[in-house]
Length: 269
Length: 323
Image (cartoon, rainbow over all chains, first blue to last red):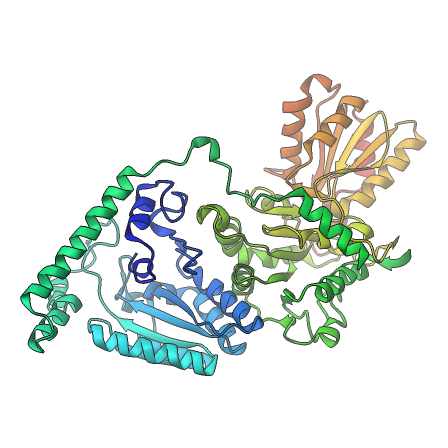
């Protein structure tokens, strides 16, 4: 969800999607796990872990074949590293020199399975070397370090036209989902990580450096609360997709004229 | 008109598509320097270069997924999977992504991807290269499933597939590649929305597609000698299925046999049978019959493989048993 917000998709559109409303960014067809936004070149939203990596490789291939100077940013978690598609995609992106920035958000748990319980090599950034891909790891609890590392990584992909892997070492405080009883780790561990909370530590740094006066913080918090309130209101007010449109987007509507015209053109050429 | 093989017809369609549309490219295992496992793309690397004729690693899931991504990115990729059995490694990308993205994105993204693969038995390649799983694919909403059975369709259906805005899967029965036929080599796309009656008849409808068409036409010829006038329908497109052509034939003949190289249980043949029951129950003079492969993994030994596959004699005897 953070990725969609960071990409600039309006929060109301995302909230409405989570409500399953037609005013959601995927018209309520995708839900929480499948955000899409074509105008912002946001391509999902893949709930089969690792399934988005090959698509990122293909998007970068299309950019390369059409000489578009774009970088494809591909986010996934540590769990995806165990999927064959992670390895296949890194290999193919390196082999074909495609501008993909692979960003692994390593929060130490693949749902409930700790990294050390599913990976023989727990240094994820190290794995990129096997494919000849430059990589780095960054403290994901440090906002400024992540910003600098991501900027550097994107620049490297842009300059070289080749892939790069950035491992962002972070943590998830809350359960994986609403149905997760969180039995696989200790409360102490969670509390330990909270001490390094990226938002709280960033706030402290801003305050210490005098960049965040009390009034400023209050204002930011008010803006955020206001945005959330508006998003919820937007979602609740949104309309439902009519049931008559159930089958609408299974296939793309084809104008019969188009193929006839193509056929004529084809024969004429 | 020109005499050419099914293989050459697919190649001619590929060549035309590559020449006419700079967005089209071909990728798959050994499609380039090797010339294709079935020599379909022989010579294309030399003509179009490695940017457009792309040899891939043995990574079915990722090169099919990359095809989806490239299609999202404005290209018109043609992905070749060496055999249908290998396509199972890409089934996640096919079912969870290619087939769903249009719907799941609320209609924002279409995936104009064409995937071709060889299917079917009869070549002594045993149980990991010989199956007919197109019926599984025909189960999936959001994609089209084509099975060209003639040289003309081998070319025309591929060209038609490239006009589709959504994913199209083309199953080329591997025994058809050397099949010869005379076609107009400049002909454009063919209609992919209709089944075709290949042999007209009055007494029984034989419904088939792909690699079983030849056997079924042969069976119809033998039956004619015995005074049974069989009609042969070549389905051509398994999804979306042209049920109207099937039902109107059954309304005329009152009997139907489905010939499908896939296994019988939970099969596409069962689907056709069900459609006839739903749409033509009152027209039937006999239960719908099916001639399918024996329910074994495809054996290697020639005599066993022949015994496992639908045969002309089985089709003939099944029809005889209906009268």
